[in-house]
Amino acid sequence: MNKRSRLFPVWIALSAVIIIAGIVLFALFGFNTAMDRTESKTVDVSYNVVVELSEENKQFLQDTSEAAFSANGISYDEKLELEGQADPSGSSQSSFYPNGNVFTVRYIFDGSVSSEALSASVADIEEAVDAATFADGAEIYVSSHTLALEGQSEALWRAAVGVAVGAVVALIYIGIRFGVGCALTGLAAAVNDILLTLAFFAITRVPVYAFAPWLYAAIAAVASLAFWLVRCMKLRENAKDPALSALSAEEAVGEVCKTTDKTVFALSGIALVILAVCAACMSVGGAAVLFAGALVPVAAAAYSSMLLAPALHVRVKSAFDKQKAKRARYHSKKRAVRGE
Image 1: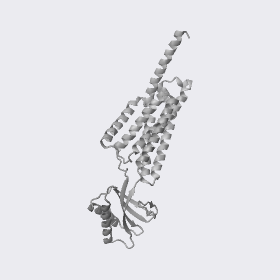
Image 2 (image 1 turned 90 degrees about the vertical axis):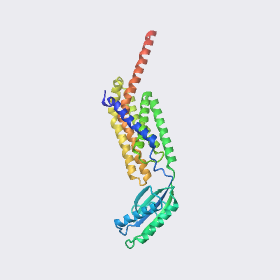
Image 3 (image 1 turned 120 degrees about the horizontal axis):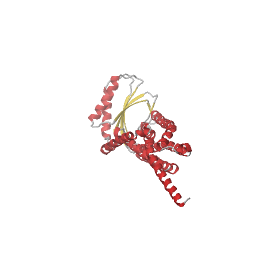
Image 4 (image 1 turned 45 degrees about the vertical axis):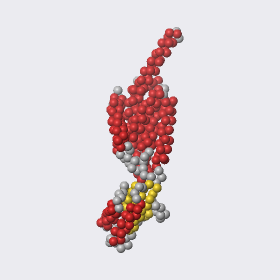
């Protein structure tokens, strides 16, 4: 037996451990959907960095702000440090130009936080700033905004459904074009990759939008079937070659892997690099997180296409080959009895 086929129990055990752990943690805690806010409120504490402020003064502003929040009975979910000139349009959640001269500490609150408490906190911060001593020309200002975010869930849900439909179509195509055996292996690999992807987010508690895990699961299915399709095309091609069609299931799958490993590896590598570059280049945090999360299903699909699926197909193809041989012997006997 080749190494991949011999280690099939190892691949199964590895997937099973991760998937079971993911199921348990999902049942207990679900996914970490902390990013899925429909509304948030912010307090921006900004100062002009043309006038150099000492680290002590910067720390004073942050300590003062956080003390004001505590005094008014509220707590922030996230703190961001933003550099750049604010968007002159005056939008409630202004963007920042990278080459501007304003440095802002932005405190992000849940949408349920009282606006009155935020206003009181802003007044307390402004009072403390007015009483403090800073360098001449330093401009320090505090503002509070409410942002109604467009819900991500509906868009991600529709994307997940669209990708899942693509996976079903690909699976049907594999079944019609390359046979039931290839379709069964592809289905098993896709299900494995879907569960591995969902288990990853359940175990690691990576913050995601509500429907992002299901979008990633659909991507895992499509990527898995796309990589498996490369193997299936070579299997069909080899089956037409008299010298290769007589090979055993293990030999046939091993031959296919030798000639397609580089292609599958290259495709998965290219997909991972593109997603990583997109995540790194995105200036919008939510888009960057979505692209970064998509690395997980592609990696899961690469694992199964390189290790699990070939080892599984040795067994599936062997079973189908035995059935085919049995039917061939049956028909031969029938022809012999009829004297054909």
